[in-house]
Figure 1 (cartoon, rainbow, N blue to C red):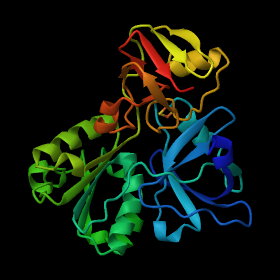
Figure 2: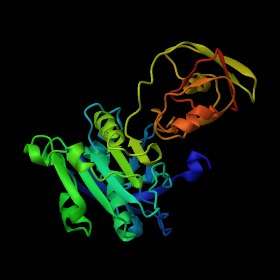
Figure 3: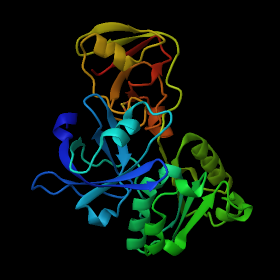
Figure 4: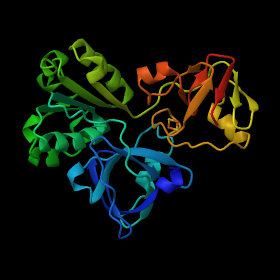
Length: 321
Ligand code: FES
C-alpha cells in the first residue's frame, strides 16, 4: 500500500501538557469511519507539515482505539518535527496520519515482562502496560527520568490497575530510588521479555544492563527514537534494475537522495533508519546496514536495505527499484 493510500484524516480533540516540554495529543476520526484498531507498541506516521512526516507511538490503552493518543517531546535538537507539533498543533485541527504499524510487538506467551522506559520512551510501553494488565501477565514497569517534572502520565498510572507494578526513578532524587540493574533486573529469567524504549544514551545503558542480567537475545525488544550515525562513507554505484540506470552515490549523499535527484521516486518517512518505509530489495551486492529497523538476523540476510541511511561495502549495489 502506498503512503498516500495508507493515510487518513484525524481531528485533534485534546492537547494537554503532561510534563515539562511534553504534550499529549488525542486524535479522533475526522469522518464517520472509526479509527482502525491498534496493538500495543504501535506507532503512526503523522504528517506534521507538507514536508515533514514523523513517527509517534500510540500511548493509550489499545482496548479503547476509538481515539489515539500520542505524546510529543519538544526536543532541543529537533529536526523540525517535534517543534512544529508544539508550535502549530491545536485542538480542532485535522491532520493526516498513517494507519497504525507495529515494529515493537508484545510477545504474549505467558512469560514475565519488564518494561524499561527512559523519558518520552514511556509512550509505547504505557500502551503495553494496559495490554499486559488486560491479559493477566506478570510484569513490572520502570520509568527513568532526569527530574520529576519530566515524568509524564504519573496521575494516570497511579490510578491505573497496574499502578502497583510501576516504579519511577529520578536521576536527581535520592540514591535508593534510582534505577539499579542489580536490584531492578534481578528477576530476569529465561522466560522474561525485556522491552526498552528511550533516548540513545538510555538505550545503550538499559540494553547492556538487561544482557548482563541474563536476558536472552530473542527476548530483548527495543525501539529507537533516533537513528545512528547516518553520514559519510565510501562512494559506490547503485544500479536501479528496473531502468538499468547506474548512479554514483557520493560519500555525502544517501542512496535515496541520489535516486530522487535522478527522477526515481522513493518512499521515505523518518529518513533516520528507524521506520522501515524505505526498505528496498537488494538483488546483488553487499549493503552496509546503518538502520535500526531491521533485526541483526534480517541484516545478515542482506536482501533488503534502508536506502535513507545505509550504504554499500561492495562497489556496486543492484536494487529492485
Ligand atoms: S525512511 Fe524510515 S528507515 Fe528509511
